Image (cartoon, rainbow, N blue to C red; front, side, top):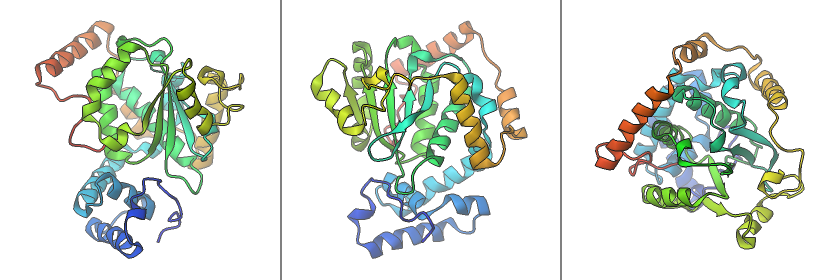
Amino acid sequence: MNSDSNKSSLNGFEKSLPPEEYLNKINEVRTLLGPLTEKSSEFCSDSAITRYLAARNGHVNKATKMLKETLKWRAQYKPEEIRWEEIAREAETGKIYRANCTDKYGRPVLVMRPSSQNTKSYKGQIRFLVYCMENAILNLPDNQEQMVWLIDFHGFNMSHISVKVSRETAHVLQEHYPERLGLAIVYNPPKIFESFYKMVKPFLEPKTCNKVKFVYSDDNISKKLLEDLFDMEQLEVAFGGKNSDAGFSFEKYAERMREDDLKFYGNTTVSSTSAHLTNSDSEVSDSEMKQLEDKEDEKIKNGTLQSPLDTTKTYT
């Protein structure tokens, strides 16, 4: 088994099978994958294969197909080549960042603030999301495979939801980062979002729905979930914690991310591939973006465009 075989994905898949059958499934996937490049071989650890098997309910052929698609995507998209300097503009408002604290299980925490959206480039937004996911994964402790999302809905309205970005976000996460989500805390969502969530919930896998928890600052029962999950002395004030110094500072966060780039990749230079992808993705005007999204919204209403969440896929 690979060096990270002691990591637990906490999805229970490996525990549901006898050890021999579990290892047999991993070996079957390896056989079906065939010869791999050095980089792909490093990615296909036992724990990685376990996550793909779990995402496809233990079906070896389906898990192999899914994993092959991820390897193809990673070879083309090159997420490991994205550097802070490429996506720094996307991060300026703190719409997504890795918190200084972890939860009580050692899982890294991604804080998300939909109301802080500051760009209209959906390709840039997706590359920023991928960078954040890769960074959180690199910062996982040895016994962890998953992360926690804290989603702050302060100041949110429906104009902050982009159909195009929602669809691509769902695709990237469900296809290429399966079983990475341990828990998603939806904090103080407005009624309008609750209605939206009820509409899309049928498109989510039941086990994904079980990972989404709604928490309200004026509800003691839901607040207890945060208290059970976090050290409240470390959690930032915006989520009911007591750490007033834990908010987002772009300058401090930029320094952290540059240090991580240097630590994990050995450099902070944007690759030629990443530079090309970024430069080719020009910003569109407000009116052009509005026209594109209005068309997609209309298609969804008419049933001619698939909903942002695909009913045939396993999401995170």
